[in-house]
Image 1 (cartoon, one colour):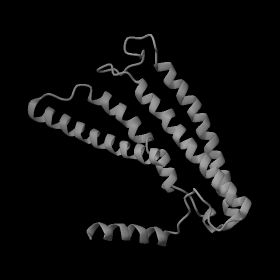
Image 2: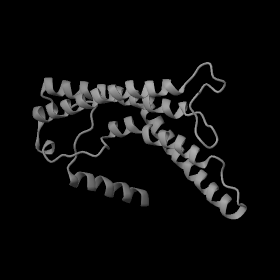
Image 3: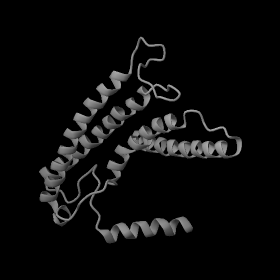
Image 4: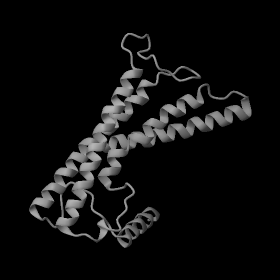
Length: 189
């Protein structure tokens, strides 16, 4: 999905911007005795972006840390059932997180306030609502990805398919190591 890839790219850009901000802060403090005003406030805002924007992309790629000791030994229907149940649990948890984080955003957002916010950072009074809105938005994108994967595992379970559609598949450690080696060799040419 292009949205997931775009949000993941945006997350990387935010990390790069945070690195540039840190360099500017250190060099400004060291050589000019002028640190970046509100450095901690800006860092807090950036953290929400890079921590959450890539969630759905990581789920799509199967990049989250998993414990595959038991599930890795399952095949076909038992595996699809185990995956379906875990995705259902994640979907329910994500639904609760969207609900809670959206109301957390609403508490900091005020349509009538001059800067649309009654909640701001301590040092330079940055409004906190943009960072608080990133969380439920990113969770909603993750929710759509999880719903798609729930459908994919449900379809594979129903049809007893060899390979489900729209889901990441578990790779054994040897396959993962080979892919990583190929990506390193490919980078060197």
